[in-house]
Length: 129
Image 1: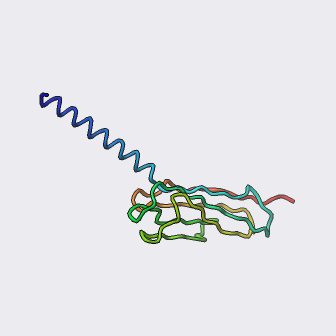
Image 2 (image 1 turned 135 degrees about the vertical axis):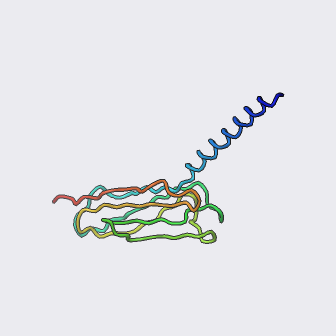
């Protein structure tokens, strides 16, 4: 095989490895989905569930934090470490909140290596009587 063909094959191989690695990195970003009712009455306690997904949960690669805010104020944060990791790749955290008015909930999770897939948002309206 001549040198030109070897260079082309090597370039294609390196490009393929890079593409596969980049796709894997995006797949390993931690993400969170928020589960709440669409509306609730003033004074009612609602359950806010955060469903966290992350491909990888070992002492090298894990979800290192999750937080939730209500109307812009952080109300809960869970921090993990290499020897105090979440119980699995997919896990749920819950909090209770007493409704005093409409709320906007944001939440985010982070992978210690690849980062976050972004902020999740949900709104809960006040039920009309």
